[in-house]
Each structure stands twice: as structure tokens, then as C-alpha cells.
Amino acid sequence: MPAIVLVGAQWGDEGKGKATDLLSSRIDYVVKFNGGNNAGHTVVVGSEKYALHLLPSGILTEGVIPVIANGVVIDLSVLFEEIDGLQARGLDVSRLRVSANAHVITSYHRTLDKVTERFLGKRQIGTTGRGIGPTYADKISRVGIRIQDLFDENILRQKIEASLEQKNQVLTKIYNRRAVSVDEVVSELLSYVERLAPMVGDTALELNQALDAGKTVLFEGGQATMLDVDHGTYPFVTSSNPTSGGAATGSGVAPTRFERVIGVIKAYTTRVGAGPFPTELFDEWGEFLTEKGFEFGTTTGRKRRTGWYDAPISRYATRVNGITDFVLTKLDVLTGIESIPVCVAYEVDGKRIDEVPINQTDFHHAKPIYENFPGWTEDLTGVRKFEDLPKNAQDYVLALESMSNSRISAIGVGPGRDAIVVRHDLVG
Ligand code: GDP
Ligand code: IMO
Ligand code: MG
Image (cartoon, rainbow, N blue to C red; front, top):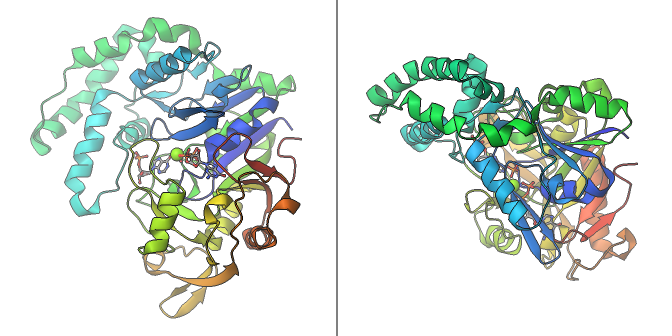
């Protein structure tokens, strides 16, 4: 099973970090292929809690080679902060590889992210403010700065000059901000070069060679399907492709090599930032899920919006990613709810719709049609076998499985590394 992709199936924070960590003991490489430090993965190992943003979660397992591939946008100050933080806790980060083609988030990208959001006012996306959108916009507009540009001061200066010529006009004349100095940006970026140099290489070549040699490579997506710039709830999305296709373009490993796609999905739904969310709860059950699931963002600390499980979204995720296996997380959070609603379809303008509507306005107006499933009161955190789950919890999982068009191969029953019920092997 050489190349495996792992993606979020909802709006992020499904527990991808924990799922990656679970597989790490059986993989050789873990690759981040999209996004940047907008991601936030919390992984609990024994009494230690790690919050990862830019580094792939597999870094917590000794021997795994972490790779930041070409599809990622890198804030170098965050990269070194994260490396230093992990090293201070005794982790070996020395094998990290960074693609020469990855794009660099600079101070002006962060500034533009914040000012454009402010100008959007009521229509704002609720971005993480990390400069993700403006950096990808520059990449697509062909005025981005790549990691390889840092190794030639002349080229770097020329590219930053070209990029700032227009941006400084916008910053000063539209947003009423100070112009950014080319020298300051150049000298900040050059200050990282010495430390960065040994990590940088042709990661597409290295990953293909690793696969040729029979190594196992896990591609860990940041964000999630419904935040995908093509397949998500545009414009309330991130600026990359977190779906499985992004693993190919974002790494230089061809789609023909991927043999398995794991979708990580919560037993209910959450979302951070603005945008449609049909099953969102505004009552005490919403509060229940927030409190019991501890639904506060790993990156920005924002309270996550919460709602019931949305089966059309799970089918949509299966379809656009080609999901072969789901990891269903946070089943333990539902303990104590007498009757658990699951959205099985939507009602739009009086009509029943079984799939996610293509029209964004319809999705904004979609009212969930619920089916209720009997709950359970037993604590699940100690359960390790499917048969040992309360009957109603088993039935809930089996119902979600039949609605999602893909099998549920593992079930999270707590935040800890070992709090998982495995039904089907995810790697073999
Ligand atoms: P990611 O961005 O997809 O990696 O997810 P986050 O780390 O942002 O959010 C998931 C949160 O849920 C983290 O705090 C995890 O420790 C926690 N978590 C993951 N799986 C489970 C589970 O099965 N049960 C519980 N209670 N918590 C979980
Ligand atoms: P992980 O990997 C949840 C959301 C932001 C905002 C939108 C655009 O932890 O699942 P951006 O800064 O990317 O331009 O913001 O996307 N968002 C996430 N929501 N989990 C994430 O990552 C997210 N990364 C971005 O809240 O709505
Ligand atoms: Mg997260």
C-alpha cells in the first residue's frame, strides 16, 4: 500500500492530526501538500499535547520523514518557531524536507489578508489571517515568491520589487496603510536561508523515488473538502485544493500511484469562519457539542460553529475525493444524547434534495431533513472493539456508513492516541 491520501471530509478539524498520528508507525513519509499555517492539528500523546500548524502531524513519530511539498505556502518564521518548539520537547525534526517550489508567505501577504477581510465588512470570510489567500493569489497571478528564489538575492529582490510595485499602490491608496519596504522583506527572507538550505530539494523526485523503492507515503491534507476552492462552499473556502486531487498537483506524485483515500469525518459537524452550514445549531445542543467536544480552534482559538451530522456532505466527500475508508471521530462526544438527529437530505423551496445542491444560494437556504437515532449513556473512551460499543452506538455508526457510500474503518472514542476502534486495516 505505497501511497495513501488522508483528507478532511467536512469543514476542517475532523481530527486529521490524530488519524495521521495513528498511521504513522507504519509509514515512511508524511507529506503536507496544501495550505499552510491556517491548519491546526492537536495530537494528544500520553500526557503530552502537541499543536501543529505547518509541519505534518506524522512528525511526532520517530523515523517518519516529514515533507512540505510544492502545494504548501510557507511562513518561514512559523516554520522555524514550530521546529524549535518540537526540538525543545525532544523531538527529532532534522529529516524535514521542503520543496524548492513551495511558495513563501511574506509580511505583505499577512497584511493584505487582514486589510481585505476588514474591507469586506459583513461579507468577510473569517480567514485565519495568516496570509494564505494573498499568497495563493500571487502564485496564480505569477508574482509569487518561491523557496528557490531565496537562494539568489538578485532574483529575490527583483521578484519582490515586481510584486510590491502594485501592492504598495493598493496598500497606500485603497487601504490607507504604509507602503512596504522592499529592503525589509528581502532582508527578513534572507535571514532564514542558512538554516533552510539543507532542507530544500526536489521533493517530487524524492517522493517518487521513495515510492519506487517500495516505501509507504501518506499525504496529509490540511483543511477539508467543503473548504476546497473548487469543490467547497465558495467563496467561504480556503485558497487551495484540500481534496485528494490536490495531493497529486501539490506534491508531484501522479494520481495513478494513489491506492487509498482516507476521509476523516466527525460524528457531528463543525465549521470555523463564515459560510453556509445547513445543520448548524443555535440552541443548547449546539452548546453541548461545543463544550463536550471542546470545539475551539487550534489556530485562532475561535469558537467553532456546531451542528448535527450531515449525510449528503459525507456522500459528496466520498464522491469528489474517491474515499475508500472513513475514520469517524469524536463518537464519544455524543454520549448522553437521548435521540441523535442525522441530516439525511435537504428541503429547498419545498422540494426534497438528496445531494449537496450545486447552486450556492440553494445551499444557503437548505433546511435539513432529519432522521433520529436512539442514543446511549455509556462512556466510550475505554472501548477498543466495535462489538464492545453500546448497541445504539454501533447502529449509529452503521447508519452513517450506509449513508456515506464508503466503509467506516476506524472510530475515534477520545482525544488520546490509542482511543480508537479499528474495524478494517487502514494501511495494509
Ligand atoms: P484536524 O485539524 O483535523 O487535525 O483536527 P483538530 O486537531 O483541529 O481538531 C480535532 C480535535 O478533536 C483535537 O483537539 C483532537 O485532540 C480531538 N479529537 C480527535 N479525535 C477525537 C475523538 O475521537 N474524540 C475526542 N473526544 N476528541 C478527538
Ligand atoms: P485544519 O487543517 C477549519 C477556514 C477559515 C476560514 C476559511 C479561509 O485544522 O482542518 P484561510 O485563512 O484559509 O484563508 O481561511 O477557511 N479554515 C479552516 N477551518 N480548519 C482548518 O484547518 C482551516 N483552515 C482554514 O476559518 O473560514
Ligand atoms: Mg484543525
